[in-house]
Amino acid sequence: DAMVIQNPRYQVTQFGKPVTLSCSQTLNHNVMYWYQQKSSQAPKLLFHYYDKDFNNEADTPDNFQSRRPNTSFCFLDIRSPGLGDAAMYLCATSRDWGVDLRGGETQYFGPGTRLLVL
Amino acid sequence: DQQVKQNSPSLSVQEGRISILNCDYTNSMFDYFLWYKKYPAEGPTFLISISSIKDKNEDGRFTVFLNKSAKHLSLHIVPSQPGDSAVYFCAASEVDSSYKLIFGSGTRLLVRP
Image 1 (cartoon, helix red, strand yellow):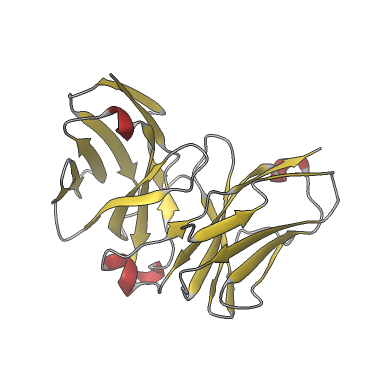
Image 2: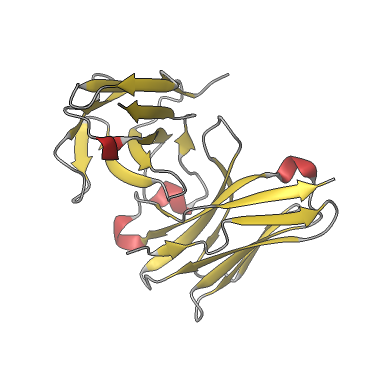
């Protein structure tokens, strides 16, 4: 009963070669998030969508883009991956934001895609 | 500039004993705190949370304590079980950016049988 699905689980790409990671959800949640987690570090929010409204974190590099063609799917595009972009990329969803986080509802995470850049 | 810090990367505890995982934060605007648990090859899952208007929240074997003056929270697991072995992340959000969770780097808990 996977609720947040990420494919592939492992992705190998070459330095500078564009790569796309995908995320889908069966929860019908309004909000989808992308996090980057480097080894032994905290997950860091890159951006999120509230429905079709895209919200970029101020310190997210321009190299990272995202698309959300419909409620269920969200993609992370890395235009020119560098060695420093090797990380675990986590997708998450939440029904709403703000009030829901405080009401106990929270973000539901996928298993992540580990990206290796050669 | 880490706003949420988990200074112990790992913790080992005997089964049946108490596990105490600690978390410190620097942002006084944080008003909601969460703990997530992560098993290998799975995404983090929500465990327990606490609002800044409380100093304690309990859910079965799990209790979170919040000390606002010290900007410190802790997760207590009593009694610890081998199935609790996982990485535990502390996270926080602030009222003006309540969609956004700021995570700590995690503590790996090993519960020895």
